[in-house]
Amino acid sequence: MKPTPPGPAHFPFWTEEKLRIADTDLNGHINNGAYGAFFEAGRGELLTEIAGPPQTREVAMALARVEIDYLAELHYPGRVRIGTCVARIGGSSFSLQQALFAGEACHAAALSVMVVLDRETRRATAIPPALRAALNAWMQGQ
Image (cartoon, rainbow, N blue to C red; front, side):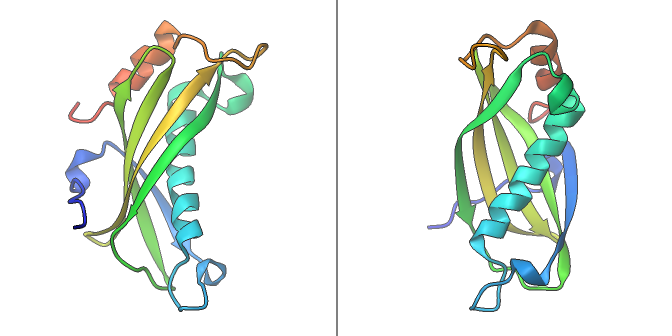
C-alpha cells in the first residue's frame, strides 16, 4: 500500500526544477535517480536559506539517510516543485520531510536525516543554538 503524503499546504519551503530529457530512462519516464537529485536540490536550497552557503557555515552538514517513496511516474517535458519542511530536530541531527509535485499531484515523498559535523574533526557535534532556531522556524506546521 502506498503511503499518503502530506498535501502542498504542509510544506513552508519550495524549490522548482525543470525535467530534462537526460532525466529519462529506457522506459520513457523520469528515472528514479533524478527524483533523488530533485530532493537534493530542495534540501540544498533550504539549508542555504537556513545556514548560508556551505563554505561559510559554522558547522558542516552531511546526509546520513534518505528514504524515498516513489508514488507515480513523471514524464518529460515539464517542471516539478519540491516541498520541504523540518520534521525533527535532535541533538546533533535533524530530519527533513519532502514531497515532489507536478501540478497538484504528488509523485514522490522523502525523509532525510542530516548530521551536523564539527568542521575540524568531521565528527557529529551538537546543533549550535542559532542553527537550531533557524531549523525550528521551518518545522512542519509552523
